[in-house]
Amino acid sequence: MCGIAGFCSWGRDNPHADADSWERNIRKMNERMKHRGPDASGIWASPDRSVVFGHRRLAIVDLTETGAQPMVSHSGRYVIAFNGEIYNYKEIAKKLLAEGKVTAFRGSSDTEVLLEAAEHYGVKAAISMCKGMFGIALYDQKEETLYLVRDRVGEKPLYYGFVRGSFVFASDLGSISVLDGFEKQINTEVLDIYFTHGYIPAPYSIYRNIKKLKPGCILTIRAPFARDGIGIEAYWSMKETAKKGQNNLFKGSRKEAADELERLLKRSIAGQMMADVPVGAFLSAGIDSSTVVALMQSLHAGKVKSFTIGMEDKNYNEADAAKKIAAHLGTDHTELYITEDDAKAVIPQLAEMFSEPFADSSQIPTYLVSRMSREHVTVSLSGDGGDELFCGYTSYVSTIRVWDKIRKIPYFIRRPAGKLLAGGLFGKADAWQIRGNLLQARDACEVYQMSYETNPLNHKIALVRGNLPYYYTDYEADYLPEQNHNIMLMDMLMYHPDDILVKVDRTAMAVSLETRVPMLDKDVVEFAWSLPVEYERQGETGKLVLRDVLYRYVPKEMMERPKKGFSIPVQKWLKEPSMRAWAESLIDRKLLAEQGILDPEVVWSIWQDFQERDQWRQQIWFILMFQEWMMKQYLVTP
Image (cartoon, rainbow, N blue to C red; front, side):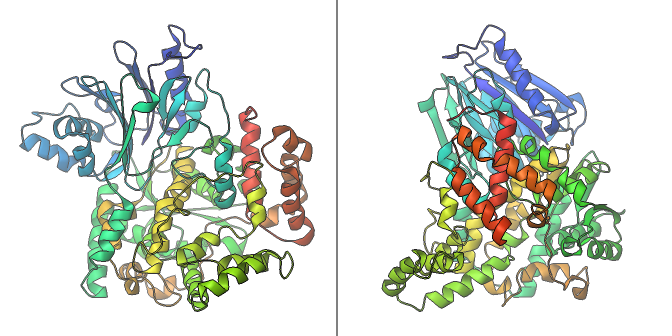
C-alpha cells in the first residue's frame, strides 16, 4: 500500500514553473501523502522532465530496495508508480518465466511482476490478469504514453486533471492541492449530489478541473498531454458482470452455493493474508467480518489477530459479542473501549484525512479501530462488501416492500397524486413530502433513489443547483430482471466505492495501515452476481448463503441478535453545549454569506428544525463536515 503522484509537461502554460519547480513540486506532492507510505519516498523524471513520478512506500511485500519505486522495467522502456497489492502476482511471475519473457526477477515484489507483465503482454491484458486492489501510473517511454489504471471495484483512489495546463495525478487529492499555481476552486455543481448522499462520487471531485478515475478503467494520455488527448476505456465492468451473472444463474442447490462460496473466499483470504509484515483483521461481530475472521483462522496455523472497538453506549456497542466470537474461533483478540471524548477528538482531523468533504459518520469508529490495529499489525482484512453482494441491507427489504404496495396503483393516477402530496396538500410535513415523492416512482430503483432525496429543502442547501448525472440518477430501469439485484448493483456502482471504500481507505491510510477486502475478489464478486435472490434473502433475513458458510464455524445462536451498526451518536452529541457551539460556529450566518456557497437561511432552517423541534436530518452532519473542510482549506470563492 502506497501513494502515487506525478505530472506531465510541467511548466507548459504555468507561470509558476521555474527551472527547478518540477522537483520542488513532486517532493511537495510526496510529502503531502506521507501517511500513505511512511517507509520511503522516491521520484523519477524522464530525461526531458516531461513526465515526473512520485511515490510514497508502505512496505508490505519485498521490504528491500528491490521493491522501491518508481520502478523501471528490465528493458528500460516502462516506468511504474504503483499503489496497492496484486494477490496473484506469483502466478503471473511463473507465467512470465515459463514463457521466457523474463529470465529472472531482481526482487520479489508484485510491482516488478506487474511492470514486466505490462511490457510483455500489453497494459490491458496484464491488468486483466491481476487480482488485487490498485491505483497505477505506467509510462511507456518509447510511445510517450501515460496510463492510469484503477482496480475493478474502486478500493484504491486515483485523482487526475489539469493544473495550469499540466496534466497531474495522485492517490491523494491533497497532493494535487499543494501544487504551485493550483486554484482551489470548488466544483459547486457537485454539491447537490454531496448534500444528498454525504460523499462525492466518481468521476467528480470537490475541485474544478480535477476528477476521479472510475473503477475498472484505464486512462490513456499521450504527449503533448493536452486536454483533448485523454482516452478512457473500461477493462472490467460491474454492470456487465452483474448482467452476465443474472443471465447465467447458479444451477446448484443452496448448499452447493455455500460450498463454492466458501472455496472462493478461502482462496481469496489465503492470497490476501500473504505479506512480509504482521496481518490481522477487523471483527465487528457482524456476519461479514465474522466470516472473514473465521475463514482466516481456519487457514492459519497460529492465532489470527482480531481487533474490535467498543463504546460505553450499549446502543452502539458490539464489543461483547465480538469477544465471544473471537473466543470461540480462538483468535488473538484485542479490544479497545472508547469514550465519547475519544470519538469527538477525531472530528478536527477528518478534513485533512479525507481531502474533500465526506460525511459518513462511521468514519470516526473506523479510524479508531484502524489506529488501534496499527499498533499490532501493518495489514488488516475487513468484511466490507457482504451487504451489497449478498442482499444484506434492511433498506433493500423496505424498498421492495414500498414498491410492491405502490406498483398496484396505476402510474397515471399516482403520479399526479404524488405531486399534490409533495407540493403540500397536507402541509409541509416531511412525511407527506416523502410519500408524495415515492408515489411518483416508476420502479423500485427510483424508490431507492428517492429514499435519499426525502426533502426538497436538501437540494436548496447549496446556492448553485447542480444537474450532473451520476449512477443513481442515470441507472437504467429494469437493467436486471430482479429488483433486489438492481438496487444492489446501484450500491456497488456508487455507494460502495465512493462511500464505504473511501472511508476504509482514508481512515486506515491516515495511520499507515493497509486494509484488504477479501469479498471484493474478482471471482467472489462474479460468483455472487450469479446467485438467485432466494439464496440471498428470505423475508427479513439477508445474506443467506454467506450465513450458511459462517455457521460452519460459528454457532448460529451466537449470531442471532439485532445489528447495532458501526456508528456514533452524532444526533445526541449535537444537542450538547460544546458540540452545539462548535456546529453553530461553522454555520454562522455571516460566515456562510461571506463564503457565498451555501444558503444561510436554508442551513439555519434545517438546524433550527433539529434544535427546536428535534427533527433530525443527516444533512446536518453533511453540512458540518463540508464547513469543517472549508475552514481547513482556505478556499477562494468560486
